[in-house]
Image (cartoon, rainbow, N blue to C red; front, side, top):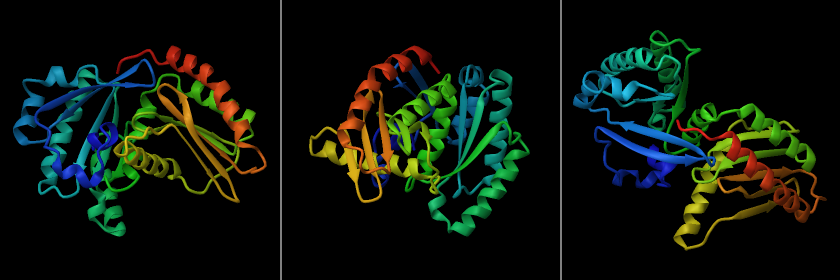
Length: 287
């Protein structure tokens, strides 16, 4: 999961990756000066016991977000619940204000009907341990956009002053007379924020775009080509994806096909320095 989002692996190659051994720490620059410290903790029994005893203070202190992954194939679901309870107890002791995300993973192994039943049952079980207002639950799979939806929501919760950033995007959307604009993080292509003037029926469109563009970027890299911008035009709309800052891409959607590409490109160019300065000044944190 971490390799797909942050290390540009594709789903069909994940079988070549090794299992997480104890704690694997990585530090990821995100949106300029914002640094994410990710601690990937292996779920094997002897590691879990160590987290709650010898490493309890080290693992659970100063946690901004807990991401707990449940495997729908697990042969010991009751043990999973007990481990989660222990984890929440340790978290409440050392980081009581942290956010909690629970990912019910490998949903692709179930039919849609089975998956919904399993998800609702698991959400009910976990809500008895941590209130639903404290935790957010997601169905995930490495084979579709659900993984990007979950991680976009996680990252969104970590960005300081996100409402102010959304206000900036709204201004840009109105100036461009665009139907919609969306801001994506450059390395992961996770959606950070968006603004729109026209409604859209597909609530998962950004996650689908993240998945598609990331696959396209990987294809470009195999050909030793560098992805910088893209324009897609048909009779209904024009979509522009271009570099906005050193750490972001922006997507602009226009239904008015009479507006020339040059106009949009100029607007993006003018906005670059403004958003670069804004993101650098607002996101000087380490999480």
